[in-house]
Length: 356
Image 1: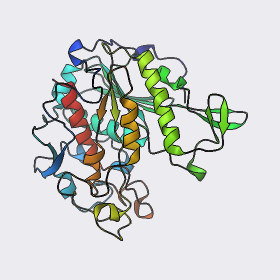
Image 2: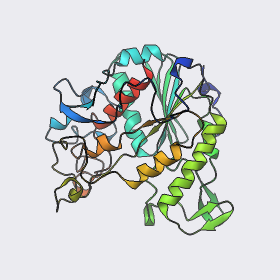
Image 3: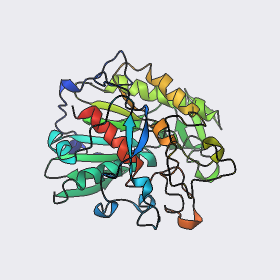
Image 4: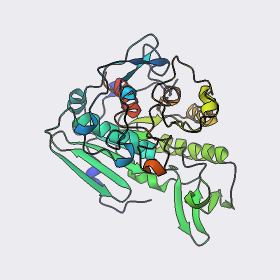
């Protein structure tokens, strides 16, 4: 999972202003908020989406639902409305101007890729004539807005902790984050992990779990997830200077494969779902992984802002690719999100944390 050398040019001008500091007393939310951005409901808004997917040529096939033949468009016409306040609309030009010379890195699995591609589209469609470069070095994809000196990067690290090959096989090392050397020197880091923790069989990319020198063929995956998060917390506490680097954690992005959770018993997928759930509460409740994540974040010494998108995503059973994603009609994707779509709102909330 490493990147061999050649990273000096990524350690660029890491001078985020002190006005971006968060409060150590409550690392989960920005103290400047007048309300909780994550409590609210979806409202129809004909001025959305924030960009037209046909104007962003970088959307990967698996997220490009309109190009893949999705016939409905109502799912594009929703805005997230918090209770008691309104989100400032994402302004790509303001973002590019404010963060000239900065480096932004998403770290995680394909849900991080969903958000990374969303941010690239939000910025590119605001300045379509700007010069840009794309590059890939190892597991890191880089989109550079050359005219602004902004790198928007994605490090594919699905567990955050390391998976290494040893004589015994592929080892998931819950106490090790050697891959973190790639994260140093960034101006903004947005982390994510969860979806790979329950993978088994052929899609499981490890043979043993190692903790404190002991090897296990398997263990409770939620416990393993928690142990890995505590290792990540230790890395943040040791390596992050809050005066230079802002840290976010993308919350648990949910799937919709069981209609019982949204009061449609017998429905097995998100196929044909065209409307959000009304109101502010998901009938099926919140996933246990979110409780674990919040528990671990509450112990961190350095300021980290949780992008607590779980509930607002649970309400969007209509936002997934379903058969209009990577597998087409032979697949069923109710985990990722269409672009344009829900991840644009994640970035709109992210924007509201950093732009003021």
